[in-house]
Length: 142
Figure (tube, rainbow, N blue to C red):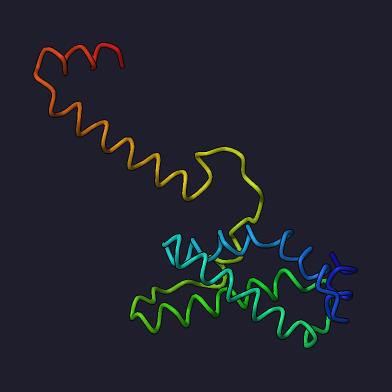
């Protein structure tokens, strides 16, 4: 990663693309956690990488790239929430506790979890509206 940052600082677009590929998901999940909206998180992710691309020359320590990128993301989220009057207090400790790992378990992916919760709500609502004999049969199966 340090080599990619150094190369990107020298204008190597492929190196910056490598950095994007390595960090885009982490930035997206951080933005999603703070913005609580998929489309807003996607916008913030794009803005964060544009800001990083424009300012990567100012980064003095290449190994600090992930933290620097996270700070850009948090600042963009904060600014966006302030503009929308939706700012909630997010401490630096809460952001630091967020682990940025690639998840393959659907239960741990924010967008999948939201989809699964909505599906569970619809199923429960449907079962609640069944006639009593069918509702009783569904409870025995569970």
